[in-house]
Amino acid sequence: MSFSHEDVERLIKLLDISHFDELHLEAEGIKLSLRRNGAPATLPTPVRSTPAAAPRGSPPAPAAAPAAVSTDSTLLEIRAPMLGTFYGAPKPGAEPFVAIGGRVSADSAVGIIEVMKLMNSISARVEGVLVEVLVRDGDLVEFEQVLMRVRPA
Image 1 (cartoon, rainbow, N blue to C red):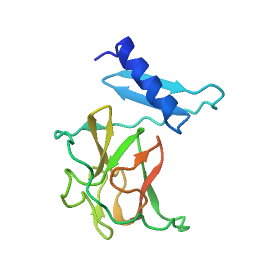
Image 2 (cartoon, helix red, strand yellow):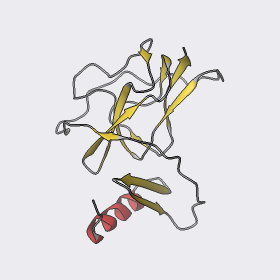
Image 3 (cartoon, rainbow, N blue to C red):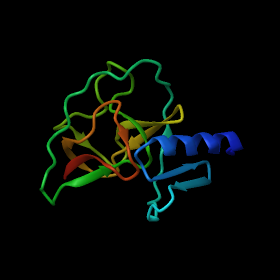
């Protein structure tokens, strides 16, 4: 896989119109990091993601409001491995990958992040019981943004 000049220009335009300062993208061994002028540099955490099969053609299904932010320091965080649009279910109108009170394991799918029409499955990477969901279906999420919190098993 390679990025054409037009692909990079499109990514730069997307970054310019967003409220984000940085974009980190990794696909098939190619890493691309874009940063606005004056934005402090951060080091991205390596994250593995796999593309999901089904593209999304219809608007996101309504979701319950995100839970209030917890102050419980024992909770584990599930973070966004990339910038994109978050979906908590495999398709519009479907049941979410995981609901509050549901158990997750390290390889459990907890959502999808869409980046440039590519669907990337997000795994929990932690084990326990889901206690908080901090994003809604269709929300634009930032790299390393906390999506969910889990009480360790």
